[in-house]
Length: 76
Picture 1 (cartoon, rainbow, N blue to C red):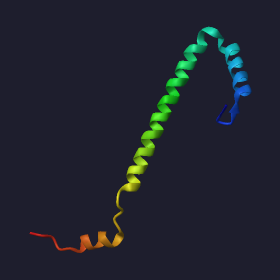
Picture 2: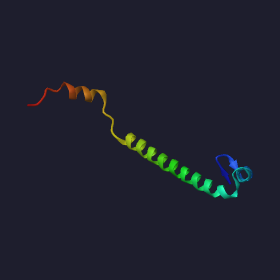
Picture 3: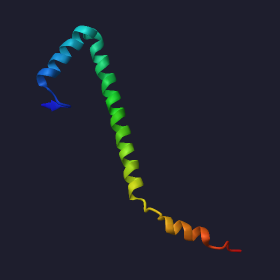
Picture 4: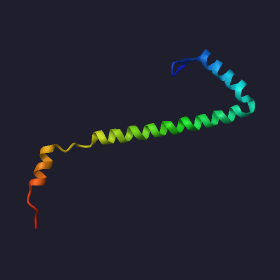
C-alpha cells in the first residue's frame, strides 16, 4: 500500500503520533473533518478539470475571422 509515497509503516507511525497528540476522543472527529476536506478538494478538482476540458473543446476564433467581422459594413 502506497499513498502519496507514504507506505504502511509510515502511516502507522503518523497514526500513533496523532493518537498521542490528540487523544482517542478527538481522533475520530479529526478523521471525519479530514475526510470531508479531502472530498471537497476532490470535487473542486473535478469541477476545475471539467471546466478546462470544456474550454479546450470550444473552437477558437482566429484573428483573421475577427478582422473580417469588424470590417463588414453595418447592415441596416
